[in-house]
Image (cartoon, rainbow, N blue to C red; front, side, top):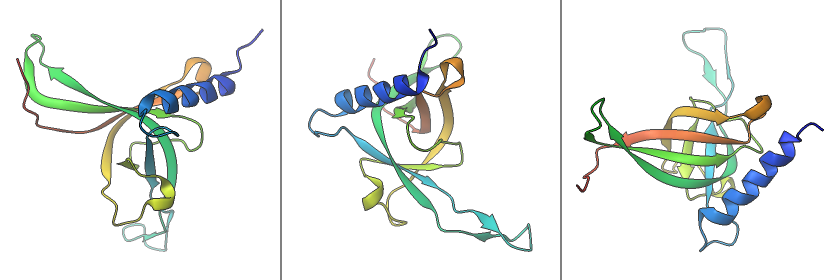
Length: 141
């Protein structure tokens, strides 16, 4: 019997919502901002359409970066485990953590998605691991 990966993706979303933030009954939301469709007669000066916003559910985490010798370097990589039901996430998209799409606007604090790592057994994405632009961090020894 073949696995129903779409059903598994829905189960993963439920799991992310249940463990992401226990202080919020529906999990910890974030909003993906997808750029508007570009059009126009001049490819070097396209007209940009209105961006769209999509609510996803996340688990927020940090990972300490090490060099090739295993020594910590002064950089922390912020990674987000993101539900995959709904919209596909791409490198050009932006994310606002802690806010649902209904509350997002251009004035929202958006972060750049540095890298999208889809987890896709059998070709069906069950969740995304996103790398957000890291910031220098003070690391304890």
